[in-house]
Amino acid sequence: MSTDILLSNEVIIFLFIESLLLCILFIAIYFTSIILKNWNFNSTTSSQYKLEKQSYLVTVIIYFTLIVKLFLVPYFAYTVDILSAIVPGAMCGAGVISSNDYGESLLILKIIMLFLVSSWLIINKLDIQKKNFPYLKKKFLYFILIFTFIILEFILDILYFTDISTLSIATCCSAIYSSDGSINPLPLGLNLDSLLISFYLLYILTFISNIKQNRYLSGISNISFLYIAYYAILYFFGTYVYELPTHHCPFCMLQKDYYYIGYFIFISLFLGVFFGMVNSILSILTKDSIIKYYKYSNIFNTLFVAICTLYVIVYYIKNGVLL
Image 1 (cartoon, rainbow, N blue to C red):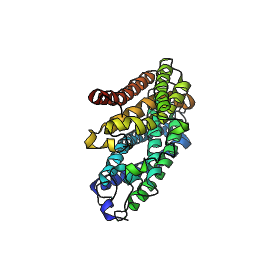
Image 2 (cartoon, one colour):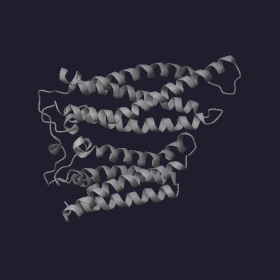
Image 3 (cartoon, rainbow, N blue to C red):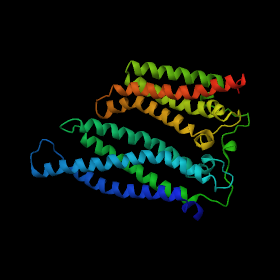
Image 4 (cartoon, rainbow, N blue to C red):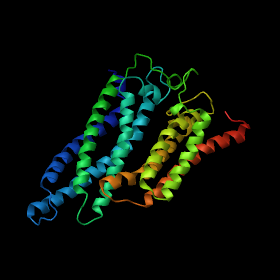
């Protein structure tokens, strides 16, 4: 355990907010269980009226707590990037994440949480828009699932930050994402050309499926696009952000040196994919859909593709050659 890590202002703020939110959600989960056990909207008893008032208060608490959880994800990325200044060998957040056995699992869990929490917020929106609260039980059951992930996430937060060492040398991003040439780092046996073809074809497929408002095709194509887009950023578009053909890192672009462009790239990708797949989730949980989200998906996916492509075009215009 390194006191330098735990005494970092960013880590103190992060863990304090996470602890506070967890305490609040423990209260919310207590009342949620009571509401789920006794809820009957058709009843006209005083106890049901009391439950309705409690459900409103609990919903507000959960809503604002989960909103804060969403903002804590980019703050977590910012925090680990700041820690790279005091972790030997780490040049960016990648080195800090890989400095112990908990970092990668924690990062993956936080990404999953982004989708779970955002989905709950949409279901809650649909529920409160209707007078009879048709999805109240479903959204509270869904919240219980999310709460179990939040507990796991908090445990991993503690394990991760307390296990970061400032004495041993961490692996830098150039070593983490480099390849010796004998092993293809790209998925599904793709080469760089086929990766880019897949990237743009999947973008077109997401665009068309969103226009057609095909919820299942949109969901599948957006998830596939997310998978391919990550590797496209890592092994192609990222090199144009850094203007170095050997620099493959998803974290360095979050730094000030690159004008924090990584946040715009990854947030636009997340929003595009989320809005494209959320109606698939809604169809399972609520039998409802929100048509305008298909439009939002196209807007953010197009913004993401435009940002990535623009870096390549600008580099070619400036240098007359591709990397």
